[in-house]
Image 1 (cartoon, rainbow, N blue to C red):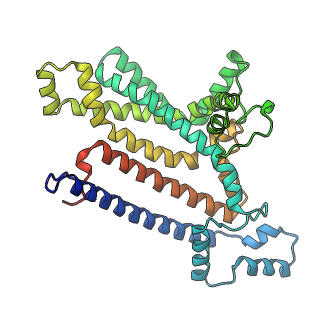
Image 2: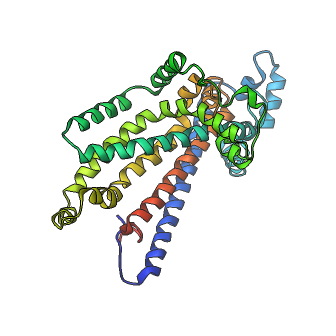
Length: 354
């Protein structure tokens, strides 16, 4: 565990914190290397010849052998792995066995849609889950707390695709003008921005109509995807708040007459934010790969649903790329959470093990 040492002043604290981050980065790089090795091995032991899958059953044996040589499948496995690893580091995952297009190009076209959906989901989780978790702790064992506990339980247990369908039915009956399919309206034409995130691109280019339209399309998919996370954050925040309320320094603040609202939002919330932040980091990483159900229901056309399609079609190059990119987001999300936690809690600004 990280502990704060006052000896040496701020420079030592900063040096310890950066040493901690360096260790984390090295560790996460090792995780990605192991992940790349695992998916490479799995891709090679899966039944079926990638060259035959790419060419189809009508291709001749000579054509299959030629393609195998072009793909490097005749090389020894260690050579294949290092070629795959070298290409992945450069962003080259080869060509799709189904479409024949570069996998990196296809991912670059699909990833912004899923990334925008996931970011909106995290914002909704934080804006709804954290305040209601705080209120549930503050008014615990009341009827208000009981209602929030039921809502959080429903959010955690009910599948996201069911929320998606219910929201579509609600819009069909009560919000007939609300969009429930796709990312943008046809009236916008082929709008293309610098980032691929429509809400952000609309702001950057001054097309506020694009941003508003994108937000309307984004609302229901993000809400459906966020329900489970909202329930988790509510429950974890409530538990953390109740636990910290029993601490001696919190009781001391109350005994000195500090208002309950000040104690809750200035002291308890900061102490209790670490657990929800950790959950959000894990949720971000998992949603990148698991958003395919909601994407399919709302015809979102993103990275997650394309990954599922690649698995169904046994497009091994695309599958390996999807898994590796998802793993990269997991690593980055956890690194960001480590940084935020270190900034929130001063005790985490020195190196581990001291």
